[in-house]
Length: 409
Ligand code: SF4
Image (tube, rainbow, N blue to C red; front, side, top):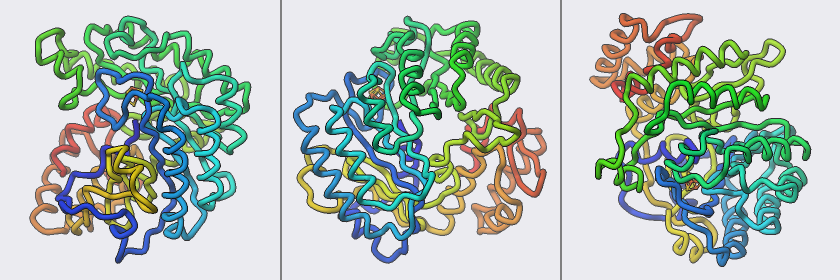
């Protein structure tokens, strides 16, 4: 459920598998954050292509021990206190409370964390209990990202999500009572059969909960998911593109009126005391700014100075290893690939990219010239603008950003 998982593998990965610490040989990582993957879920949702599987509770203790060993090995690459930690999955809060405590404690004791570091844990609403919330707080977690997805039972059923809509408010209440003020809610739009009115109701339901951050993702049909197979069999019609665009437009309008800044294509943060950045997800900012983050746990993807790698996405192989995880999809980005990544990720932010950096990227060979033409066309069409010393999407362009970005890489 994490953006980082979708980044690696866009270039030409080396086919060889090697330990993650060897993959980092030759570069001086400047890790600012840590992503830790928990692969266990209660149930496999039909649209999900993340590395997760149904938990049988028989490997949780081994998982926690292995996380500790991996952190012990990889911490030697951490040279400065980390500013962010993101524990994603899967469903991290499905770990037994004692295993969750051990896992979080390994993070706290194995790597240095900066004072005031942002520490997020992903949770499904139905797994949030007072006991889990107490473990999170005691461990130093200060932000939770909740997968609400929809407040309509029939749409949750379509997605095969197993929580009921009321559990979202219950979870937010438990987290707040425990002292976790920063809560993100994830919503999905464009679910088959969903109406614009239902989507608006979802947005209003989130606003009623008073949370400060919201991620809205259009439903995508990834290869080999149960949802995609059902669609291909003709069991349902996917949401119409025009309706999906209207949904995104309504989200932008409703959230703007409610005092949120649309700071990334799929993300909104509440403006606090005039500060539009206060509630942004600092960890995801590392991805969008192409900074370095460490990856821990099976299938977690990391980045260091142009080297991307993914820990082996097979629990058995990951558990059997010692020290660093075996890494797959190790990729040493060429300058051109790095430029493409920088454009693709940086332009996802409403703030855009500094013009000087854009000029440098566009001066790179034939790819640069093609990108310059695509950007020129986007500016002519009113999708992008050069403003405040940056190249960025216009408000209208943010609605179609994924399409425009596809032309740039
Ligand atoms: S809870 Fe999240 S990670 Fe787990 S199966 Fe569902 S969508 Fe995938």
